[in-house]
Image (cartoon, rainbow, N blue to C red; front, side, top):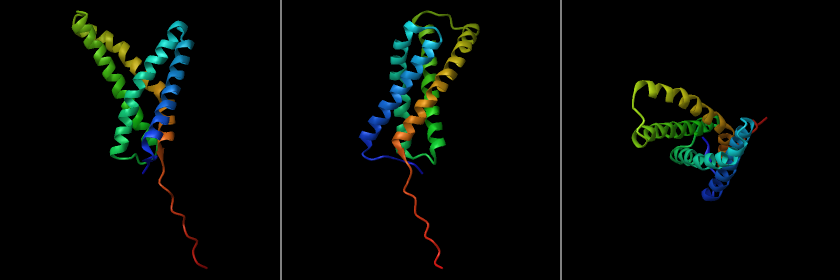
Length: 152
């Protein structure tokens, strides 16, 4: 089972900083290649802030019980990213219907879902590199017990 490195605050800060910067760079590159150059920097900064939510969420899970292996750790981070991105889409739809007087109907919900589902999928896909870096920095494997050579 993997555990968090000690001192926790130092390693958590380093992992959070490195993964957030990588996440911002990935989003910046995605926006630049999508021919939205003027929006790339602001979107990278916005996504960097949002990534802090799912990184803290994953760390909270790991402090309760450490993941079995690195693949599970990445899965936890991606799961938290999916949760945060999905909640963001729900909040965006709530904002449209409640604050901006968007009619709540099945057809409007369907159109919003056709936009929101690929958007959440792309957000989770772009979170994979930072999830890998985050867990690599923050988590450590337990010390391996050296197998003693059999006596001859």
